[in-house]
Length: 164
Ligand SMILES: CC(C)(COP(=O)(O)OP(=O)(O)OC[C@H]1O[C@@H](n2cnc3c(N)ncnc32)[C@H](O)[C@@H]1OP(=O)(O)O)[C@@H](O)C(=O)NCCC(=O)NCCS
Image 1 (cartoon, helix red, strand yellow):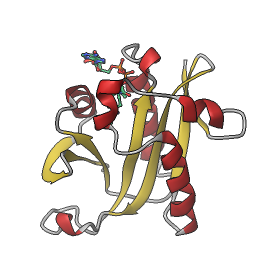
Image 2: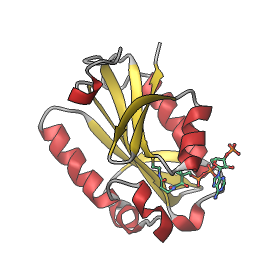
Image 3: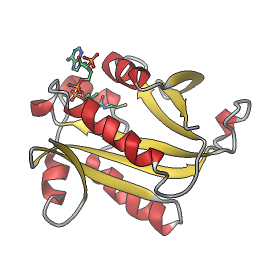
C-alpha cells in the first residue's frame, strides 16, 4: 500500500538518504534535503509548501513535495495561466532500489488526489517541470493529463494540467 506521510523525526533521515541512479541525477534539479530546507523557507515567506515521504507497505521508498503559488514567472507572460494560482510539483523521486514497481505512479496519483482537494486554497492549475530527456517522467505525467507548454528552462519543460 502506498501512503504519503509528512516528514517527521522518525523518517527524515531515511528520506534524506534516498537516492536516484547515477544516470538520473540530471533529471532532478534539487535534492530531498534541499527541498525540505526550501519548504521551511517558502513556508516562512508565506508560500505553502509540503514535503512528503512516500511509503510502500510502511517502508520509505521516495519523496515528493508540492507548493501553492501564483504562476507569475516572467517567462509565463504570454501564457493563459500567467498570474493564475497553481499547485506546483517541486520534486518527486523514488529511490533507485524501488523504481519500476508502480510506486511512483501510485504516489503521483495520490498527490494529485490531495491537490484536487485544494488543501491550501482554490487553484486553476497544477504545474511541474521535467528534463527534456526524462521520457519516463514525461509519459507518466502525460498519462495524468499534463500537457507540455512551450516553456523550457535549463533543459526542463514546463507541463501543466487544468484543475477545473
Ligand atoms: C520517475 C519516477 C518517479 C517514476 O517512478 P517509478 O516508481 O520508477 O515508476 P513506476 O513503476 O510507477 O512506473 C510509471 C510508468 O513508467 C514506466 N517505467 C518505469 N520505469 C521504467 C523504465 N526503467 N523504463 C521504461 N519505462 C519505465 C512504467 O512502465 C509505468 O508506465 P505505465 O503506467 O505505462 O506502465 C522514478 O523513476 C524516479 O524517481 N526517477 C528519477 C527521478 C526523476 O526522474 N524524478 C522526476 C523528476 S521530474
